Length: 248
Image (cartoon, rainbow, N blue to C red; front, side, top):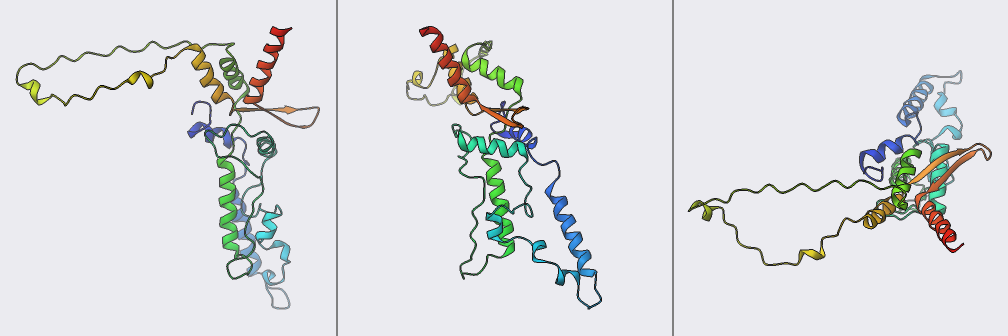
């Protein structure tokens, strides 16, 4: 949760990649323009809605599958599109997010009666696909946080351990009152198997598990595109260079 893989922090990081213009306003504008056209009557006595071209009509399932989904949901921003393409090419460990398999929707073009899918169904299915795609996105961390997590995972930086609090002892009741609060004794169990010593090596493994799912995005001025670096690949590079330095 701290590094935006789940919860509120993830929604905040993901919100930076989405379009700044809410899609609801686009729908309202389209609805307003359509209502205005319906009220406008030309000289032939026909409304503008009757004479408008088919290009202004809501796209069907085939058009949505071909990429014309912006009538129902917002389009991907350049940052989000670059992140999705990188996540498809280099899928991170899907420990907290489902695996991203594709960027484009695959809607059924015909219904059970072999007729074109109703536009309401197309609209709802497109929104479901869009929400499902966003649910699979691993939003990038700010550069400073990503580098700190990289140092923790590689061992270049250590996190100070917080000492455990001592348990406060409760005075045992005396006399007959002790019988009222007495609980049945639990059977002896070996709890040592469930416990794990919090060692620096153990914490590095935990940091590395989180870091493998965290990307960082930087603008490449020379290439004119967004560059995405995943924590898993950064760790592999650090370990490879460390091994080469030892062997060399």
